[in-house]
Length: 404
Length: 82
Image (cartoon, rainbow over all chains, first blue to last red; front, side, top):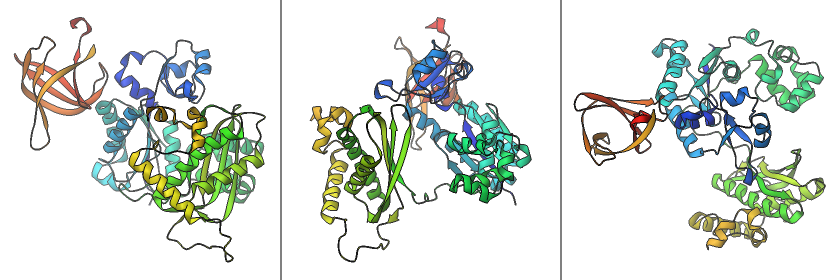
């Protein structure tokens, strides 16, 4: 039997939350944007008047102001957004226990089991729209379908404070392929170069062909376009599925111009990744490095180790080797990220080297555990490497050092 | 209309419920709340904000909405009254 899944998306969430307390911004172009001094100055959300003036999410404040000079720009208040997100979510739980968050402002709801109680999906959808608007003061777009992907597409197509139902592929056949979840710029260009322009085209192509041109993602997009699978919504309170990767990314306060700069930021990122691995008792095998230069061009690279590790030092040294091998400083770097994958639990057996040339150092492990204990008890800035002092602004320890 | 934050004297009962008893106006007057007709979660579309809306009856038989939003109380007011 087909399920009934809703995708509920709060309209212009950050901007709506701000307008809730500042009704004076309802009719003027307004956007929520990060701090330009920390080089996070991009538009995170905008209201309808700003949208009508051509302001787009993810563009810089300067670019937005060119199109709309009178744009009111507010700093994000994440605490408030989290509060509203939780409030809306607790309202969803009044309709079903199967609520799966997708970011702060989106959720999938499997209401198949609640239909007999509430009468029909229409009753649930209209009640949700009404209650979120009246009780919380925000508006929703709801997509209704039999799986998560079509439901998500439905909420993208639905107007503000309304819903859109997608029953079958025929309803969306003519939409551009780029509307589908996870079809980004790159996949969109590849599909277009092969003459695949609509979701209908994507669904009609053989799975093998899509795999050939897009790799693993081709498989996923074939399923997405044809509405196959993807209908399991997590149950409230169920344990989260185990992590597939752990990552940390940072946009530096200034461009990274030499290896010392990169090393300072990498040390901080690798400590953070290793601490989170340690919390979950995970070991990694593959290290990914991500760099974005000041022209916003992104490069990713990866290396797989011979044996498992959970050491920050291993992540850092390998990430740095990757950087040395593949990157130069012809264009300075703006942000850098580290991720680890091929994760396994510490308690799982793993292959060590027969001749004892293991790179895993128990001494190093003890040292890192000790550092983490100090940080847990006395705060993140209680202990840091001397390298971080070379540029306290870059390493983000500035205020802490002066304060001590 | 504007959102005007006010001081309120409340009773926190054994069940964890909060019942506003007096509203303290800016001239230090304590205005007794005679009756609470309704408590419901509501957003104030007139002045902005959202939280628990208490529909209160003040003497002589005047009804006002009192909002409780993240630890603060406010009422909706006409701009010219302030």
